[in-house]
Length: 310
Image 1 (cartoon, rainbow, N blue to C red):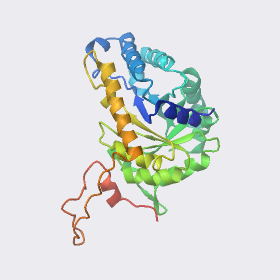
Image 2: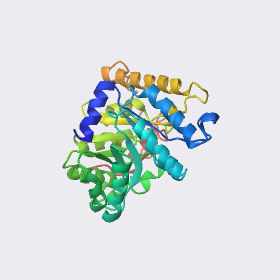
Image 3: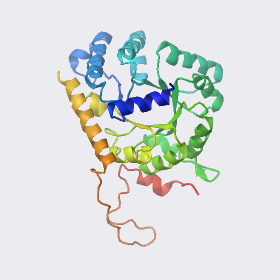
């Protein structure tokens, strides 16, 4: 079973497309759990025990562990070992380097840490990704259109008549010979998410940006899956992991996940359908409708100011 099949299987079993980010920030967790690597492990372990039947993956961001030095690397390894074997682990490392170096990164993440998936940057091209793709039973999520504000600095640039992020999506679709590739596309840009979904074919999409970053869960679920016909994971982190600063943090995390799963289930069944917005009055060239959502967190600025496919 490859990584994509494993992902689809656990989504069906747990009835969830929510990926929980395990970004352990001592400044946010309850004080008694922020004292050492051991207490941070206890925090993560309690969260995993409370949520493992409600998620389709866990995604630790490696930066939160690297900042702790050698203790952090050991902490990350212990946490991954405690995650049930059937649940995919996405190590968010955003690696991308020349082939010889990349082969060592791949060994560290796939063999030493036993990650199921890793996140990669495509900027240096195919040879920087190939050592990861050679692990045919593992998966890679490649950065395509990210949820941060600065994504438009490069990802939206017009290259031969189309935005760069679309070219990245097309390249990765071509490289996906072993069905072990996926794309990272932010929920904060739902219309572009729909475009990437069309390009991606059967590849899984990892969709961050819901929750603290303001992306719409409903649009991420619908657009990221082409109306629930293709695989996607919606990542949430802070809004769930730190739902409570008290001793009930694990139970509160579970409650938040239950709410998210119920929302997605409602969208899938049609119960959460929202009435269409009224058509805005016509305006003169250069004017914005009075009820325009320009400047909202739904990515409308990107839709108006960046090239779209011809």
